[in-house]
Length: 367
Image (cartoon, rainbow, N blue to C red):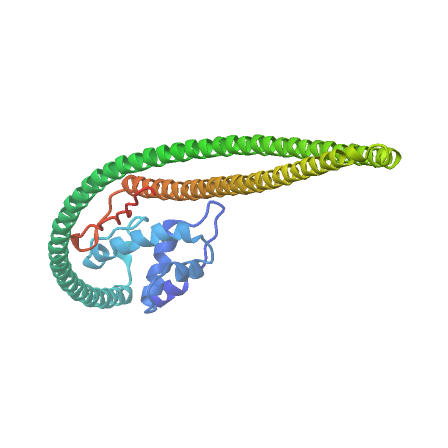
């Protein structure tokens, strides 16, 4: 049988049970004889049907048995099919096989060379990474030593900070106690000053009332004495008038008694002058007494004003001390809160192994 007629006689075979492996092999042989590489799509086009999933394992089996068939050991799904291959198919298959083997060898050599180059590059990269890893390990070791030193320094700083905080807390407690004692003392002094001011005010008011009462009594006595003197003067005038009338009546009859009456009148006038002098002395004494009372009243008022001023100064000093004490207490509380937050903060790497020294609060003595 002519090989060309055998190839031309391959037609698409359709079956209700699907394609057979012999159909795939025949289509592959025909494609190989035509000088084409058998592929799944070409085999399917040659047969005219079949899914890629069905054709693929059959075509792989064809490729697997192609070498044995070319050597003369026929393997075919149909009995004796491989031994009856046309010479042109066998030659084409051998050429294709040699070409495929040469291409496969070249591909394998290229792959081997690429793999070797990749291995060399990987070795170089690995060596570089090992060198970098060694350097990083040395750097890590140096960093670990620095961190250990920084940690030790930080722990020492924390210990010193705790001791300083304890000292500051004791100092704060002492300052707070001194401030509270000073506040109590100033409050006591203020209370005493207020009490003294009230007592002095009451005493001044009492003395002022006594002086006013004494002045009023002196004025009343002066007025009473003046009224009495005026009454006596009036009586003396009346008596003088009566005596003058009687003298006028009995002047002729009592000429001898005129001198006696005149002498009595002179005595009465002298007595009246004495009374007037006494009244003037009493008025002068009352004026001096009144001036002394005014001076003493002014002195008491100055003392009361001084007491008010001292009480005001004490209240101002107490208020200033309270404000200063509150500021000191606020500063101490803020310092305590900052130190507590610093102690509670997790330990971290300290720059260049140096621990920051906390700022010490200035110590202020209570005023």
